[in-house]
Image (cartoon, rainbow, N blue to C red):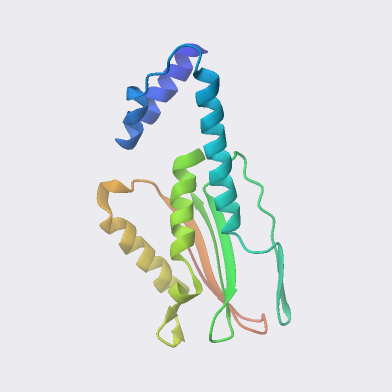
Length: 173
């Protein structure tokens, strides 16, 4: 089991130059529990931040009622979603899933959530087409080059104020 854990750590370390910092951590004998506790505290804090970015569990927009539940499989997750009223009266919404698990996926998920606001769904005074929002995200992450090598799946949509028409775009890895 220790050999497979070491191999997993080596693979994770090779995935990103940022992760190579793990190789430089020297833990004094007897401090492993303190380090594990500190890392656990950091993960719990990250999970709290991630949950704060999510919408309320039940929201009504006139005749439209949206209910949601977030249950990550780990402490932090690469999953995120949100919805909001647009100035046009429509409802903007998205759900995304970053490839992978854990902290790396969660960080990209949080970054995307911070980008995908009601203003990102608008072009001056008109709502953007969901396909354009997704294309803009694709261009942004393609321009990032090797710095961001992860992928995500997204469904991005606009729902009419009466809840009768949904315009959406789905794209992903």
